[in-house]
Image (tube, rainbow, N blue to C red; front, side, top):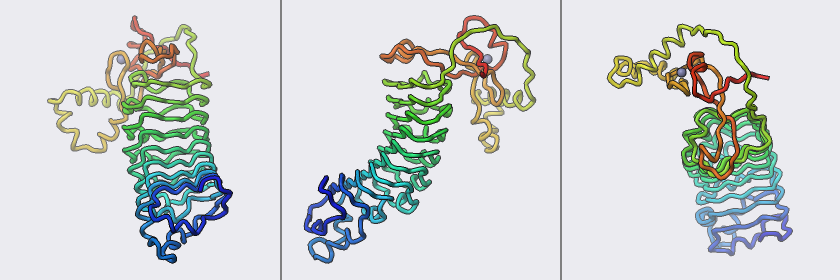
Length: 339
Ligand SMILES: [Zn+2]
């Protein structure tokens, strides 16, 4: 029933006893009446629960919906839901929380500003597409979606991404072009299956630590604010580390030794463990660091280092533990000065 100039769902839908895919895209429909389920019951051809049981794909793209119709939440076998190019501005937590079996959710070209945290219920979701909306942030609960392989947030108003997105370990394609991101969260290396990353048209100054260890096949990163390599002499000041940092480095270092007292005792101090998980390590000497480091950058050639086709050089963040490491010979880490 695509492109039929429909203003409402025709009642004869109930005669389609084998209905598992319902295409209502390219019409002028703005509501799905609850009768979608009841209609069939009235006409005694197929009972309401039958549609609810067998409908697996529903395409409502290119209509005039202002929200995800509540009745959709009762379609318990629904796997694919397309609602692109409508006028949806809010997504109710109730409906979102009821779409538990969805594999594909396409809400491209709407006016959505916010996703409810109930998105965490969509544990079977593989493909989430919200390109061309007005999203300002993404709920951290997205990290619950373990099956996600493809996420598209192109053309929104995102200023940051939750680090939890890196919990989606199966992610192969991540589209973030044309947002307002000035950095990507640290920990990107967890996305071991990531093949396509599109961050073109943001405000990134560099890529996060260990970015060059990803196994990317395609990277789109034009039109950002990447730091340039303009080497200049630096003035050295011997740093004075705080007691906290000194102790943290000692504990982190000891913890690497499985037979040490610290390593065996740490499990009894969960708060301390939480604090120490924020630790990183020196890009040169690999010494652990917690809160104090020298902000540096190195320039990675995609073809040479990451075996990609493009021979582009991009800046990747690196942390050094001390001036001692910074002034040592034979490395290509540059200190970063803010403009
Ligand atoms: Zn070091």
